[in-house]
Length: 295
Image (cartoon, rainbow, N blue to C red; front, side, top):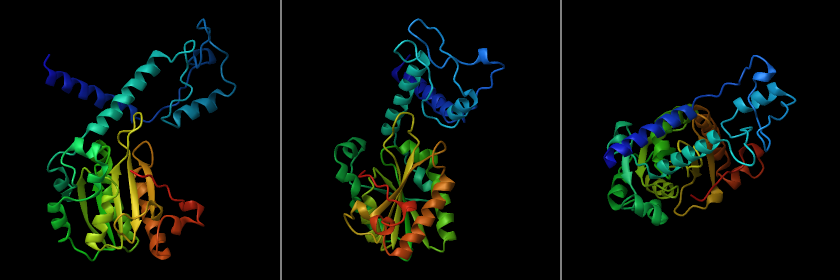
């Protein structure tokens, strides 16, 4: 088997693992108590007594993709748990290495741009290169319609896979929800090798009243498809994170795109009413506490 064939096989297996992980869990429904799974095992593999509230435990397991009540053998993971951890780690690594194909953004109707990062490696090694547009992209942005209240931006961030998977649905939902709140929305821009800070320069160049950037999050175990939305009211260069807000974990197993878009539109309505975001907006509003990460 050639190296290319092996790589193709690995990619196919990972895709299958991701597809299975995204399927909703179904609570087990054993015929009797003795047929229940063994949640934990003693040093000699003797089953422990069944849980006191089996139905509540089943509901808890079915309600979350988190690893809970997985069982053990002695002091070790079960083999299935260990293999699952390895697979989820591989998903995270693949997500970090993923890239958006040439031409994909244009197919979505987004304006393609690029930062000063020359390639993926440079993007990782020099974060500041991902926070500024290259000269050609600056020239393109300067010609964008500058009458919009809000400028939408899509960036690959630390997981292009997340943008490829959930980006189109999220951008479409954001456009609908924001317009529903009465905002004018600029044509979405896509930025290759993007860090969050690139929204500052774009906001200044487009003269938008606010920007929203959707980026792939830093992947955790099995979360290579997760996006974040960062909002910034009154864009300016090197804008402080305390003036921004974040909605994270946007994916099918987390904050689904439609719900996240509705939340973002409500947040922007409050930002415009308050004349600011982040700490200024949420200092006295527990429902909209800022969740900001330096990315």
